[in-house]
Length: 115
Image 1 (cartoon, rainbow, N blue to C red):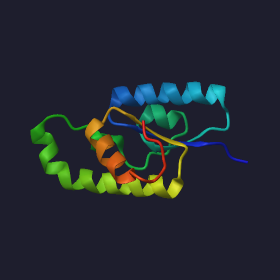
Image 2: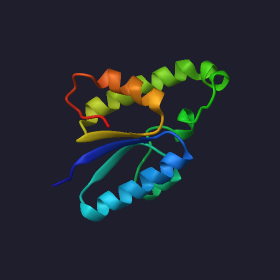
Image 3: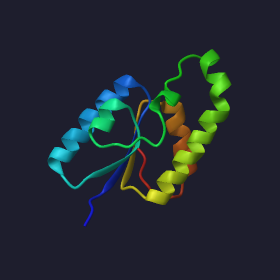
């Protein structure tokens, strides 16, 4: 039997550290937890196989974001599709607020809690 699945998204290196620590602490409390999502090296060390490189979300400033809008929109769509397919118990975003809002909008009505 497999445990609950949590879908965790970190948007930058500091978020990856927080995500990795959180995953470790949650697993200390419940060893059967499974994780999916987007993260970096710290979350990978806790067993996350990132859906795509976290660095794609690590954009700061309007001039760096504008050229990446098409790929960010594609990643929002892909992430929402993956979440709907996996049906996790919870989706947790750590930072990446614009990305989080875009994915959450696409998940509206799915019954999957988003934090």
